[in-house]
Image (cartoon, rainbow, N blue to C red; front, side, top):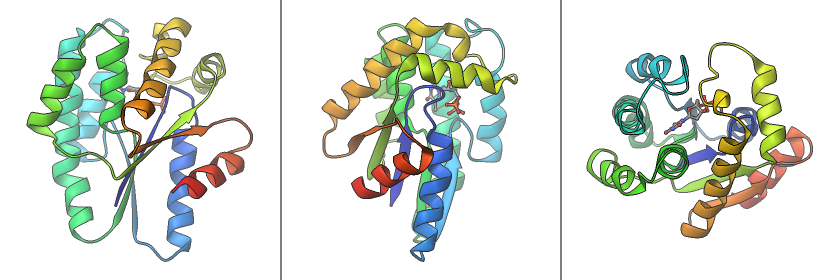
Length: 198
Ligand code: TYD
């Protein structure tokens, strides 16, 4: 099974990925916890081009191509081999991030995103959990983390608000696959909600 965790910057999905992987391992499952952009050596190299530097470093179109290139490598080298070996893959972000960040929030590129996805990726997770939190809270957490990986946080609160709206719309667009999870409360509260939904 392929499970993805999605949401705006600072929503807590990396913590939730670890907690979900731990819970599934405690059930005796063989779990691979991975992330995007990245998750394979080549894709981690592409990650640095994407998350560091100025907000306007890439055009939205170039950005889509880089995210798709990274995802293709992640799929070929990490996700597919793990699924073929019968493992459960939990990925911190997948194609929905491109749909929302590049397709909805930065110019009207959704059609291009969908066509690139169909051509180069062609798979969807079995289940996707979108962790829904207030954009101001998420941005404050993201900025508090510091470090060089702040390219998307640097685009500001109105950008995070457009993203939150985009992720909620995805849950409505893919009701069989995408579940919206209330991201308020402790990490343990949120993790329990995800496990119950799964
Ligand atoms: P991530 O490492 O998940 O950051 P965070 O832990 O802060 O949520 O993702 C890095 C950034 O890349 C994040 O701001 C979201 C963005 N992103 C896209 O714009 N498109 C994509 O397809 C993906 C996978 C990520």
